[in-house]
Image (cartoon, rainbow, N blue to C red; front, side):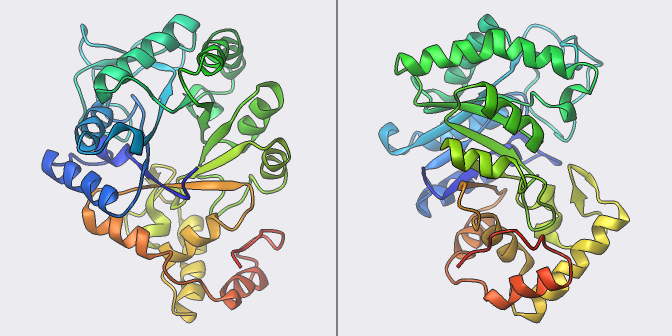
Length: 335
């Protein structure tokens, strides 16, 4: 699996509307920079990111690209756009949380066998391709569905989505299956009860916080499950620093998070290293981590992400962060 992948959530109008040409130019920059793994989802702009990615990738031979997308939401084009609630029913006609634009389709949660097959078919049509290499079951976590509904959702996945994807993998239709969530505990649970090839974990193993360190990452390594890390900037704050309006977990960062990031940033600056560079290189330091999924909204952001790996971070920076209690002492660091 490639070390760097391109994440397309920003191409679905995350936080703000993105010009079509800018989106395509960003994909082109990723291709020019040698990136060949592209992660997307129907959730990103209710299919808009998949549409844009499919357009941008058609300039490459299909066998040169690895596409990862997700199941768990089916789009209904016949009714006004709305947000799918935790029980799968539709809410008011407003944009999906965090997305400023997107396609005018209604998302409905569906982790059943038939819903999974329908979601995958819709993704193939939006992407304009006849195959997808990696399929992840998306957002089956407490963050999305709430504590009261999560057990029912997990049961639905294990009875529907997981057997459907396992059969597709066994038949050679897809190459790898897994889950894509925001919680390390859920990742560990699924790795223990399902035969997964990979897991995309967003935000829970970063320079800011490492809840996946104690249990999930060692388990993934022992089970030979490839870990794809998304959200290594924790929704933006490790890219922007502790500036006014900085985002953490898709919302304005609370003061304790701003203070901690400012302290981490100060250590990075003392060693002449930018905060985003330290965040990216740290995330790859754990042996269980196979790939970083990095988003961007402009070609220069793609170039900056790629360049951040050109030179190593001084080992003394990691030592200082641990000495100051800003990084778990047990966390592996790049060598």
